[in-house]
Amino acid sequence: MVLDQSARRLGFSATGVSRPQLPIAAHRLNQWLELGYHGTMTYLSKYGLDRANPARWFPETIRVISVACDYGKPDPSRARLLQEPARAYIAQYALGRDYHRVMRKKLGQLAEELARYGAPHGYRVFVDSGPVMEKPLAQNAGLGWMGKHTNLIAPKAGSYFFLGEILTTLPLMPDLPGIDHCGHCRACLDVCPTRAIVKPYQLDARRCISYLTIENRGPIPVELRPLIGNRIFGCDDCQLVCPMNKFARKHTLPEFAPRTDLLAPELAPLLKWSAAEFDEKTRGSALRRAGYLGWLRNVAVALGNAPGTPEVMAALSGRANHPDSMVREHVAWALSRHRQPTRNGTPGP
Image (tube, rainbow, N blue to C red; front, side, top):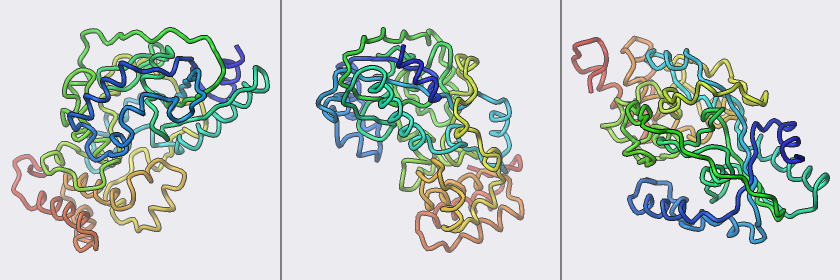
């Protein structure tokens, strides 16, 4: 009772408790890594199966408290934005403040409240900030089930929420695991622009637009660039079509309210940002994860997929001699798209 009440007062929308053991998740992780689906995310392979063992990072762990925090609900205008190639699409989770800092602080407060009103305990908190498998832990804690797109889905809240964990020494009663309700639905597999969901419950990150535009530090494969469209940071397609997101709820914390300047910005001006402007305009935002050069790379690709207006051509030409070779190459690709003859007024492949 104390856990639920304190969590909701702090802005968390759901809580659950699980044991720390993850034998099935460990097996699946090992198979996934062997297939190379993690791409250049070497931090995933660095810790290997230790990621499935929370006690590796806090030896006294007896239970794991998983929490969810809603960050929004689908807006029809978000899907329509994907049909406006001159404007940028940014994944909804990144429209507010960086969730890592916000949730880590509140998880610490929750852990302290449990110590004051319940029993003293040792603990360690995680918010996508260490080698802990948060989605399997959350599923085991009853917060939802792992969907075919590999995001966690809650039966009455969809998938638009962040996750966090408290590894604790409290011997709390574990909750029942979440039950899969995807059934025969394959909407997420069919809508993925790059076919990154290679089969139900298995994602090849090397093809995923979120990976390509955020975690990837190198060039984006040429054959995938036209498929990225105007997505410059992340992708929501598999969530936008998920029928369970009719239950998604408004953000529970004011920090996650979308910034209006990020909802549908014009692409061309974004390529003109200096490093100082990028630093200033992304302060406190998850957008910093891509880095300045990654930002320019992503915007250049989107401009290559946009109509070749004078403003678009001027923005690309202004970056044609950028000192970074990766940025130059993506700008050159975008310019070449607009110099090719087309049949329908859009850039050729």
